[in-house]
Length: 210
Image (tube, rainbow, N blue to C red; front, side, top):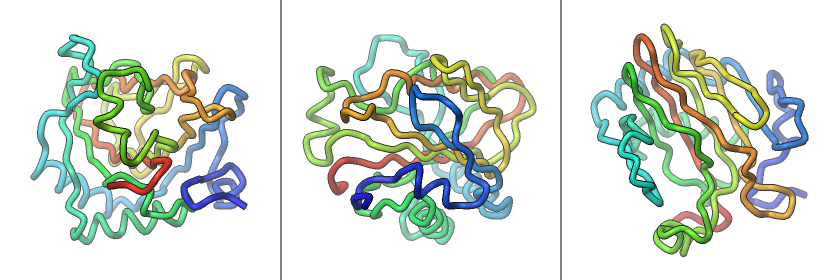
């Protein structure tokens, strides 16, 4: 039985439309049309209304490492509630283990250079971000719109690139079987060349959020 803070290939693949990327290096899945176009539009409107510069843990000194803008989605917003319900259903993870979902906006030239979502246990910000809720376990990311050019997500070690499509979900396990962070989850939010890119990201933790 899967624990309350875990998703699994068995649970995800029981959902029609979910596809697993054929690789032994990480657990990575996609599902097209996970969100409706209407819900995507409402989430984009909220991101536009409340966006702020994105931040980084363990800043490397590269001020251009992450150049997007971020929106903390209000929990009482109808669109946020709908999103959270859908994520709970597909992930199978108890909502207590989830960080609040975030929206991100990428303008032309903006990107998030190759990175992993899990925190470095030796990093300067480990205690700040992980003392209470522990390590990030799963990532669920959703594209909210098609992008005119650029803006793909590239997983470098498996040479797999995903193009933005309205409502498409990507999700992956951030750890190896031994529970340590999996370096093969390294991914690059590539530069937008034309238009705008909007995404939603939901991260889950080892222990309840808070």
